[in-house]
Length: 171
Ligand SMILES: [Zn+2]
Ligand SMILES: [Zn+2]
Image (cartoon, rainbow, N blue to C red; front, top):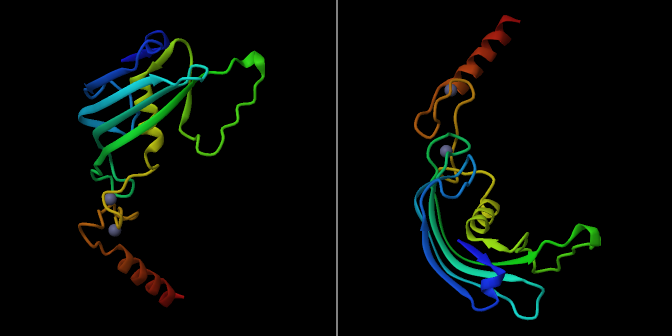
């Protein structure tokens, strides 16, 4: 879905739609599971130089891998977003773009408007944590034998102490 300035000049655009996995490229770490649902509206803000505001609900599930143990670490997103887009400033004007406090959610668009798909992709990728965990206390994989330490207590730590003791005795 594309919100063009030309249309928004006449009226806000409402939407209620779904995206199947693959329709939005979320990168390598986020594997969309099931439909992404989004509903809301886009409007052109009055008395601005073409600032577009998108307010929407977003629901989507992702299959991710735990950064410590590689087991599934599903992520569920159910949020209301409020995004602002300004026309990309022309480079030749050498305008320093300074965002004021509270304006962190402002992005820029080039051309005639904003693509909902790209707006959602950027928002979701940026709002995600850098790492996912299957559980906050995940113990991860043993660096020696590769066992999942959430499931089994391997003996590597004990064996290493034993072999250290043995080599100390040899001295
Ligand atoms: Zn884990
Ligand atoms: Zn081990």
